[in-house]
Image (cartoon, rainbow, N blue to C red; front, side, top):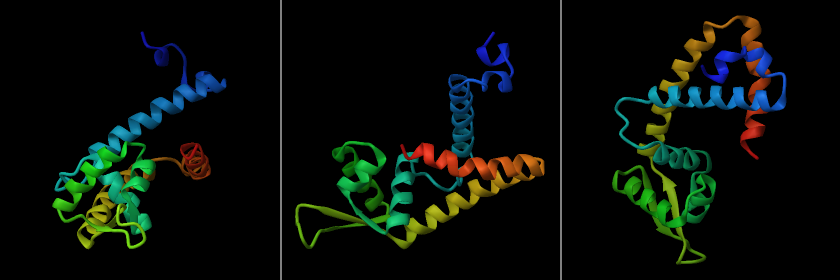
Length: 153
């Protein structure tokens, strides 16, 4: 019998450790579900989509900045950027101030891909939210900024 079956969610969440366990499990399940709801025409990996998402927000970043944002080594990011460039999702160019640095910029194709992928996942999640009670949705509205804060540590 699993720990989750031994105690109700509300009783487990009374302690910080219990809350951490409950949140970890719920967030991981939600992430897996959102990954499964990706745009079916999108053959990019989750890591590649994360890079496109970063570039969509910032327009352009160096390979080093992307590696730091995604918490991977620069050689791994160089490979990811190479695949994205080969597919026409990003463009690479040398930095004008330091020719050793590579600047990566998202293309229109990359932006369209991010937009379509996010729209599909948002639609799925909006349908699930619509099935909740108004008080449950209100609680999630209050929790969303807190979850964002936790994710930034």
